[in-house]
Amino acid sequence: MCTLEKRGRVFILKLTGDGDEHRLSPAVIDEINSTVRRVRSDPSASRSVLVTTAEGKFFSNGYDFSAGRSDLSLLHLMHAKLRALFANLITLPLPTIAAVTGHASAAAFCLVMCHDYVLMRRDRGFLYMTELDLDLEIPAWAMSLIRLKIGSPAARRAVVMTSAKLTAVEAAEKGIVGGAYDGAAGAGGGIVDGANDGAAETVEAAVRLGEDLVSRGFDGHVYGRMREILLKEVLDEIVSCDTSSACVRNNASRL
Image (tube, rainbow, N blue to C red; front, side, top):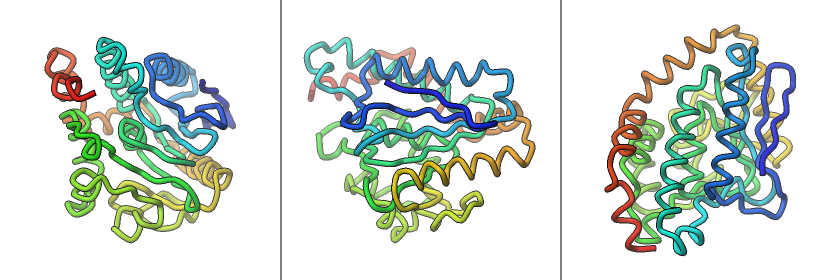
C-alpha cells in the first residue's frame, strides 16, 4: 500500500497502486502510520526531510466509507487511526512536504495539510473538502487544522462552506497557492506552496525543496517542537476527541 525510499537525507513515502484511489481504510492508515514511525526511528531523522506522495490519478480519495457503512465501528476506528496519524506527523522531528500528484479529498486533504509544505501538480488533481456535499460535519480537530493552515477567510469559506474543488491554478487565483515553485521554500500564506507540471516534476520539485531544507542544517527536534507549538490547537482537539465518543456521532447517522 505504500513504500519508503531514501535519497540522501530525503525520505519519500509513496502510496502505491497506479489505478488505486488510495482510500483511507484502517489498514491503509495503519501502514502509512507505521511507515512514518520508521522514519521517526531512523538515526538520521532529525537531519532529514519527509516527502509524501502517491501513484496514479489520486493522491487519496479520503476515507473508505464503504467499510464504514457496513460496520459503524470501522468508522470510529478510521477516525481514531487518522487522528493518531495526524499527531504522529505533527510531532515528527523533521520537515515534511506533501507532493500532491492527484486528487486529495476530505480526510486526504487534511492529511496534505498536516505537512509543512505542499507542492501540487498543475495539470491534474484538485483539493476538495467533500463534507458539505455529503451532508457531513467536519470534526473539530480537522476544522482546527483548516483554520491554522488556511490563512485567508475567503479561502477558508471556499474550502469549507462551498466545497470548492480547487486545482493548483484555481488555488493560486484565490490566493491559496503562493506561486510556481522555483527551487526555494514557498512564501505563500495558504494551502499550496507551489504548482508544477506533471507528477514526476512535482515529486522532483519536492525532493529539491527537501534538499534545500536539509542544507540549512536544522535540528529536527527543535523544528518539530516549534511545529507542535504552532499546531497546539490541533493536538489539543485530537486529545479531546480521543476521550469523547461524540466526535463521529453526527456523521455516523448520515452514512
